[in-house]
Length: 628
Image (cartoon, rainbow, N blue to C red; front, top):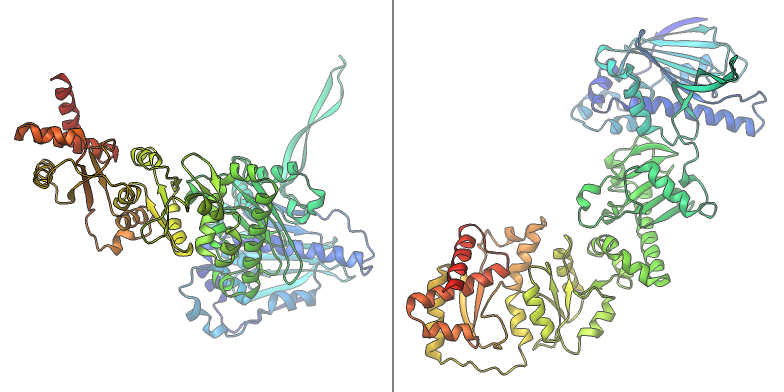
């Protein structure tokens, strides 16, 4: 038997197109060929279990080998194999529609998976790296083995071969541009990425192992070095097993297998769905604190244990992109493009299901052991807040287990906190007011002032809180949130006090003029207010609106862009009843300005707004005044 012919396609330049347009992802050739070998192996196992194959299965390990001298890579399986007719059918007839539009449609593509997935070109990804490809195959049926050869054109040759054993061997003769793949470490890198959890054992090369070899004349144990298989994959990863058969130690061990250098996770969710779609996997909640931008792309997407991608934005809800773990669904094809993920109905159902499972798990943890849940809140709070902002269905459930934390490190549900502050913290329009701090250290003076009035202050000091504050205010009826150092807070916490100014109107105008001259900054609006003598002599605040815009801009929310590039504006409140203010009035102009500047700089320092030359001048002035 010997035959020559042309591969059945309607465009002559299919291979140059493959090489050119798929080149950015050229290492996927190995994933494609090993996946084919796994499929062939599983098929022979299935036929054996059904009684349709009577022979011995034998060792089904798939072999990957590199020959550096010949510059070849070979992938050998002991699976179902192919007859000559099957080779003609499955290899020679590339059946895809619209081939004449292929070049124009995909000339600018950057997504190799998109081409492979649409046109079934998995095997032909071999030609991204090889000038010549040989297939040696023998079917499980009693028919002769065949050898198929192609040199990267549409010409092929097929003839009988002497291969005696069942299965298929694909040999790639690498082109000059792809000689990186004859290096063991490069192949190992690809295998680690794509084949780590395939359901059939994959052997790559041999490794040396020392074994006992009897005794020498003195009775000492002798050793010899032998070559043993180097199996690179775990054929039964944890997500393929029943949760009831697994312990906490099993989940933690698997986490270390996935992320060897990470801290232990907080907890995990085992996914196991078979209707209306198929989905298995394990999602871990990591300890992330505030540096979560560095943690994305940690979830791995598989299809029947074959790695697809770690860019799972459309499969996993956006707010859970910070989770770690594995998702496996046969409903997602191996060669999947981003456009497919965005449009596929199964993907959308998986996304919704994961959201529900996470909400159910968090609710369960909250109800089962609230103390333990509160201990984890600083880590999981980022997920919950992000989810409440971005996913309405998640928010409906999260309202019951989302927590607010105050400056005394006590935790409250939304309902609990409203009940706590409602009797005391209301404005003139009877809105409940939540006071919050974004930096307890820098805003300590303001926190202390509020607490002296028996007001509670929440901690909103993580990156996402600038957005969460706005979201809460929109969702909670008759509720306003005010940062503890905003200009509106001072008015609110003194709303019931009838404090009269000790200064006359003329004195207040004089004090205002002294401070305006001492400050000399048009961004600072000076006002003289009647406050308690125990309050600071000078307080610098910003409007709540400006604060929020500033906070959102700092986290990429574009707040300042909304302000049209407006400069920061601050209010400087001069406490008419403070002894220092009275002293300023009694001093001559020079000394009065000096003391006013000192009081203002103290207020600036408390807001961490004093730096550079201004800070140096303040220190020198402080030393001089202390020495007088």
